[in-house]
Image: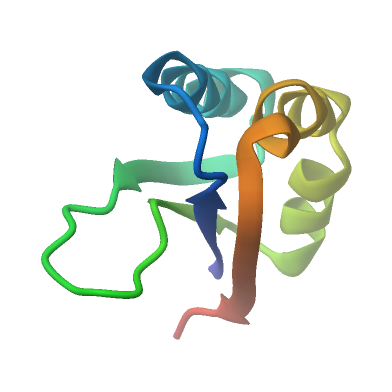
Length: 98
């Protein structure tokens, strides 16, 4: 298994509707990209200072399957259309499980 973790931080003037559109767009990806084995999205609950606003954890069978996801046109469209307009900062890491 291979895991991809992403943390997103919104721009200050991102609206609730824009944030919801990001989540809705991300939720379409497991249907569009069969290489995704598990996909979890969640907003930060704000119990600590300095955190990001949204976390995404995606699991794949292999690094090659992750690359399919990374470069998939549906994924790239979600990034371009709904994430980038409200994105202040992003952090990501990928690693094998087990």
